[in-house]
Length: 378
Picture 1 (cartoon, rainbow, N blue to C red):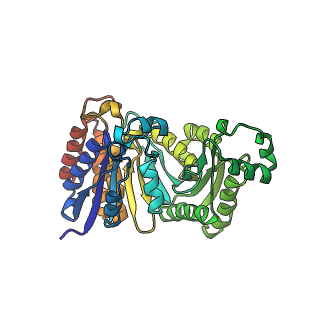
Picture 2: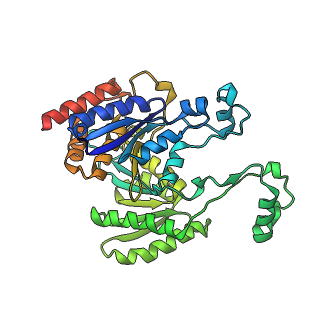
């Protein structure tokens, strides 16, 4: 009888190819003997045909699952998205939303964990000694989705009456104003900081760097910094570093080997983790876990890449490493280690290289090379 119920959400575009590659690798290490895979619906197809990119049946599936392995989705601005609805769904008041953002909020997956590790032999590495981890707060901040355009009169009136810096907008045409909010809570800030510091302590990273902008965004970034300074007192072997997001972009390019654990709010974490991913070869190597107290969704950080759909071309290593993260979260550490060792060995050999690495290996071909290496290492 299967031990784990895994909800598999291929999503759109190349997500379907990379998920298949990852499942093949999971088969190769023997995980599939312990797991029951159930495929679910998510993404652009279901937005266009049903007006809902995250159908209720998929939410029900996730609630019955141990965790989820996710591929990729296509996402477009709301006006473009509305035009692609099938005709009978037009003028129904449907508004597109990001299904992965909704999943993070619905299941309170407050940690977005993004390891960025350089594997020896990767021709795309900026340096070979990069081994850092980004903790991105996943449920609050600028991505919380509380925004207006046009701005309702009551909202503008409240802001103008309660903040002196808003008075210069008092006479603005409300159709010409857009507002997006950046909301932090103390609990939300404390738990992402604690998760990052616990991780640094567990895996012997000497530093945790808070990446914010408190000199300008004084209240929200300021809260992050103030809470970090309090919490770090409980971690005598971990040093707290603080840097602004713009400076962090510069320092990561200059000295990425100096950093261990980075922690940031939602948008800043999104930005800095993509930058870090490029330093270790690009999004084809960038995996992530959306992790809560009881549930998690694992995914590559790349998008659906529509121009490569059906070409069996893209690099599946990010999704394969996401599957490896899933195994670690489940406590299947030996199987996870086998996958990482095989990935590292294939990259080091340099015989199998996808187009982004300067080679001609296909998506399925890279998965086959990793599966073969697993067998050899056993």
